Image (cartoon, each protein chain N blue to C red):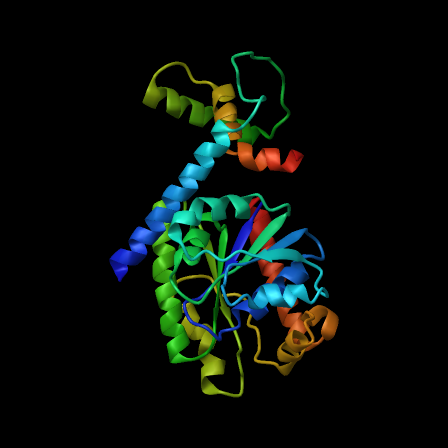
Length: 88
Length: 215
C-alpha cells in the first residue's frame, strides 16, 4: 500500500513536470530569442544581494561569470505560465 | 496563484462544508475558483444552486493517466486563488493536488478513526514534500465538527498538535452548517455573524495570511 501511494505521488510529480515543461515550450513569441536589452530595475537591497549571491553560487557551480540578469531571466522563465496567466 | 487543497482520507469530516464556506468567505477579498475533485460532487451540486459568490466546476480525477490534463486545468483557472475539494481517499486526485497545492488543509473530526485517517493523510503529504522539495505543500490541520461538550471535542487541538503540523482555528459541529447546506447557501449569507460564520472567518483569515505570504 505504501509503495502504491509513493508511486502515485511520483506519477503526479512527473505529470506536473511535464505540464511545466510544455508551458515553457508553448510559451509563444516573447520567449528569450537572443535579442537582449539593458534596463534598470528598482528593487530592495536585500533582494539584489540575494540575486548576486545566487549568481555567484551558480558561476562557482557551473562555470562562467556571475550574472544577476541570468538569475532573473531564469526565475521569469520558470514562472512563465503563471506570469502570462496574469496578463491574459 | 495560490492553490489550496482540502482533503482527508476519511469521509464525513466536513471537507465539502469547509471548502465551500471557506471559498465563499475568501471570495470577499479575492477572486476564488472552487474545484470539486470528488466524484460525489457535493460542492459542485452546492454551487449549482446559484447562490454562492464563487465560481467553479466539478473536476474529478480517477484515472492517473489524465493527471497532466487535470493539472493544466487547475493551473489555468482564472482566479486569484484556487480551492480544491478532494475525495476521501488516496487516489489520483489527492496525489495530484498534493503536487500542485501550496497549502493542504486537513479537516479532522474529534474521533480516533479520524485522527488515524489524518495521520495517513500526513504520510502522503510528506511523500509529496519529498518529491517537491522546499517544504511544499504547507499544511494546516483544522479541527472540524467539534463538539466542546465531549471529551474528544475538548482535547482535539492537543491531539492534533502532536502530529507536528500547524493547527488552525476549529470549526464547530453546528446545525447552522447543515441548514445552510440544505438551503444551498453558504454560512455567511445564511447566518451572518453567527458563531458558525465567525469560525469560518477566523479560519479564512489564517488561510488568507498563509497564501498571501507565499505570493
